[in-house]
Length: 215
Length: 424
View 1 (spheres, rainbow over the protein chains, first blue to last red):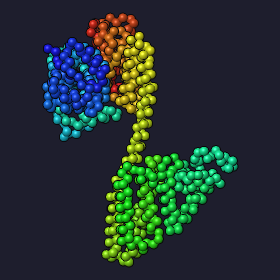
View 2 (view 1 turned 30 degrees about the vertical axis):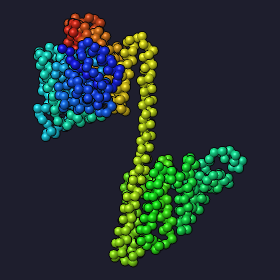
View 3 (view 1 turned 180 degrees about the horizontal axis):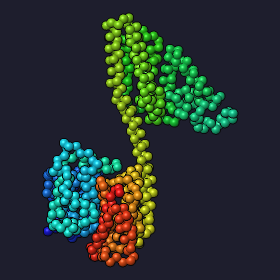
View 4 (view 1 turned 90 degrees about the vertical axis):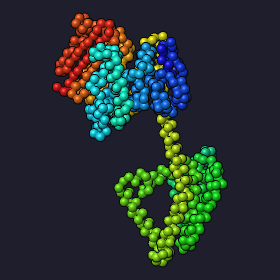
């Protein structure tokens, strides 16, 4: 069954382009060009996957996520952006998006990402993996003892390994081969990283993004 | 001399007095203004030196404050030479003028009543012109144009003692403290003088003064805030305009030029892609790294320029991900040079249109991975034209105690893994 996909982007050209790329491979159930309309229609149509533009007037992708996630947790979001700014990426992920890809992603890659998100997995682009590794690296960052939840604030060596391979440009299948594990296991590692990213209350995570921007 | 040029001068408002040539009509000066430009304007009108007019006003001010009052009246009633209406006209012309007038009259009446109670007549003839001048000053402050307010604001700023700029120094703090104390002591003296002794009456007078100040503050605070807002709003507007101009200039130099180039080379797919990518990178750099905050001379900046070079020269996409950063040195440069060789090989031979570069700076080592998903080759049978691999990659890294690993599978792609200790 084709996943039901909804597009949110304030640029008509981008929506058109994505629509034509996805034509026939997924069921595009609608599109919106602004935050309020997006929330309303998403709540009404309950698509499987929302392709969400990060930068929009009136709060952007994060506002859409906030308006939908509580009421309709089954709707999954894949953030789609031209921005590589760490704080944008991290903030949509922390608001609940299950993945992040850049707009210059190729058609087949985008489809793959949509199917993955629809199946409940996380989608990390190399760049996002790099951001996460950077954010969770302990080196040179001052962690205050009280703030750390050891389960959430550290990545396991295996998760680190997987993230490194993603950053190096490996597909999930390549990673599975490289580490001699199943693709399912790779997916579960990535999902676990995503969960840590979203649930960790380590305030360094948000600080990190702005610090990085200044550096 | 001036008389010869009289016809020239009279066609437009002169900014300086021409000695001996009276010029109508009377307008307040702009360029020669110290405070309100009244003296400067009078000097132009009468054809005398500004200094003369100023001295006359100062002398008049000593005569029961008549000079002050006169100055205030002219300030309110005469328009600035670059404006069409006087301050008085502006004040009356306000939208909620009825309210303004009522409030103004009420305030003046209230002030006079309180002053009379406080024994104003005892202060003598100086008091009335002085207080009328103060009221006039309030009028100026409410009615003046933004330009004039800015002028006054700058004046206050550059003035010693009360100036914002001056207040940062320790010296001015002490000076201000001393002057403030002297004023307060004198004020108390006068109150003492009025009531004869530091008794109940002095307390009452003091209390009255405080109430007066409080009342004035309540009456004037909204106006004052509005004036401040006007000024900051105007300044903000100006900054915004300047920024807009900067952005426009930048977009013109970069994006518009590139779009023209793209339009021209519409037939050449490779050129169009290359142009678009270069422009994208440039714009991204500009948007996310204002003022070029990525300093040169770091590992990251070296890799960025490598990314640029490969994308421009070979027309492939480079996906660069960097975790951590460090200062560039001879070792780092060698690592980047080896990575460059690997990336060029990937771009040139693999047939893939994407080269992934991942770099990670750790405490003791730096890792660099260059990967493509192209045709791949058999590393055991490196053909002669790929001697580059042995020389520029392996040798470079091995010389510095690092490790170079080349993994390639035919049909699946190649990855060059470079690890270099950060110090020997």
